[in-house]
Amino acid sequence: MLVRRGRPPGEGLWSVPGGRVEPGEDDAAAVVRELREETGLDVAPGALAGSVDRPGPGGAVYEIHDYEARVVGGVLHAGDDAAEARWVTEAELRELPLTEGLVEALESWGLLGP
Image 1: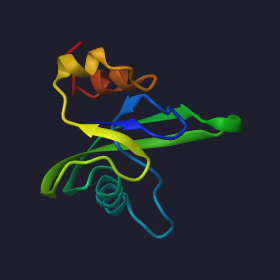
Image 2: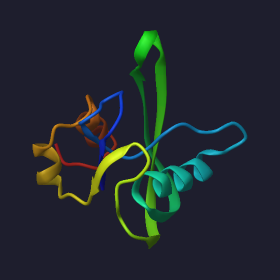
Image 3: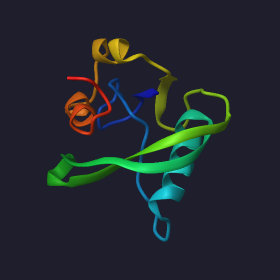
Image 4: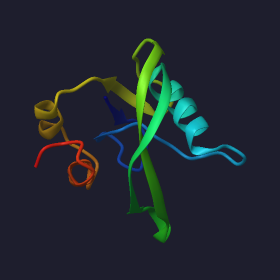
């Protein structure tokens, strides 16, 4: 499942949904909250899929932790800062304009074939 980002960074590009962990929130709670906000889906967070560091505006570095999740409710729709949300096949994913490094990260974590 991917979202097309509606705001910078990466506005107009497709990526996995995500966002910041709020103060006092653990990663699992952030996964549940962010997916509900961006996609309308209720999820049960799973194992860590992988982590990457990405450059951000003004020299910032974003430390990103992506998790597997299982949908347990809700209806898929774009929300919050997502312009679109949809399920895609691996072939469709590779044809979309994606955020930099997404395919390489998913391949290195064993979630996509080379």
